[in-house]
Amino acid sequence: MTDPFGISLSLQKIGIEAENLGSSTGLDWLDSGEKAIASFSPADGKSIAQVQSGNAETYEAIIAQAQIAFEKWRTVPAPQRGEIVREIGNALREVKADLGKLVSYEMGKSYQEGLGEVQEMIDICDFAVGLSRQLYGLTMHSERPGHRMYEQWHPLGIVGIISAFNFPVAVWSWNAALAWVCGDVCVWKPSEKAPLSALACQHIAGRIFAKHGMPEGICSVIVGDYQVGELLSQDPRVPLVSATGSTRMGKLVGKAVGERLGRSLLELGGNNAIIITENADLDIAIRGALFGAVGTAGQRCTTTRRLIVQENVYEEVKSRLASAYSKLVIGNPLDEKNHVGPLIDQDAVKGYLAAIEKVKAEGGKVVVDGGLLSGDGYESGCYVKPAIFEAENHFAIVQHETFAPILYLIKYKTLPEAIALQNGVPQGLSSAIMTTHMREAEAFLSAAGSDCGIANVNIGTSGAEIGGAFGGEKETGGGRESGSDAWKAYMRRQTNTINYSTSLPLAQGIKFDI
Image (cartoon, rainbow, N blue to C red; front, side, top):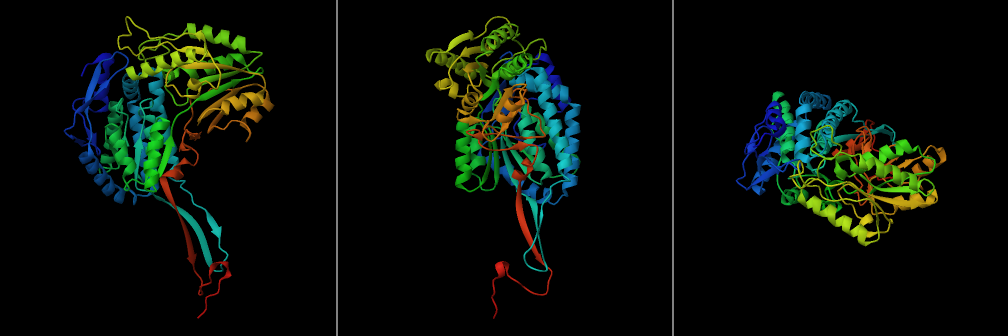
């Protein structure tokens, strides 16, 4: 591999050599013999490493190992499982700077965002440790004398995790940390666009499990294309598949899992809006909209894609945003002076350029024009200009999620109109309102307000904390990950009734005497 920015040294600190890596059932790499997947950095276009692609044979080996591991792991008391997850969190703390650098270089997000993604992993491990002592069930009063009723929660088994390139490690950890303390084992299919970050995490976690004498297979990685996702989705041995990605992909996963009556947890597309009212603090509103629109180069499911602005402040917001965009510094994500890094690859660039042509063709007006950047520092061909267009909510391209830094400005008169515009897209992930008016905020948060899974006041649409359940409605899939009671998705509920009397009364007063 090449060694730009000390990536090779960072990998050595994590504990792996980035040469000829394959899929993994712990610390053992499996070589499928398939053609290797090259991990390229969008920062400079250079190859980082070659990763062996899995196939049906390696998949079977990994699933078999996971089944064996589950038989032991589910018998380990939950607080002890939590203790192991605590150590994984501490191991991540030790390599935060190096893993954050790898995430930044392989995916293209800024180094600060790479560090933030690793911190999310640490945070969810901390959350899971506490959760390991709080897997509560309810007790209920029985209608029959001498009977007691209660419910308890048991592990599901193998949890399949399909993650996307934009958060190559954090979303896996949201699922894995909770699944592990719940007693499940995990098989992870990372994005083939960022496999090395996944294998680094796999090595870190696998080392901790091995230290405690746990069997390989509690955490596993299989690298590959969509066919690996199909294997997970169609496999009845995998009771839960958690998939993050496009709505198109989620529909395929949901259908395949549903046909075998399995469970799917889907985190799909977003088309997120911020409403800026005439009562907004515009300093906060502009800052929230700016990071929401250009953070991760617009490649977050929670990216702000629409700005719905009250007509009395519309021109000021437009002017101030254009001024802020003129100050953005675009360049290598590992240089902390830069605000915006590259798109993930050439296909993403094509999608970005096509969206710009479409919005112009539909009548959109340029506020800040986009385009591809070239020259020194932009040799990868993945750097683009964040763009702003005045548009209408009904434009076909506005209804579509473009994974790139394109922001649409939409004008409104009344708050009910703004909320209707906010809700008037197929997706329902994240939303926000900027206002200092209590009634406007409460209307936005009411049952007649935002229809999204996330609704914020005076903060942007991105940057969710792990303590709250993360997910959305409509074409976003309806899944919930991370905090709150999202853990219940990774367990099966069992209702128990105990008769401690000397008779056998039936429920509902039924008599059955002989």
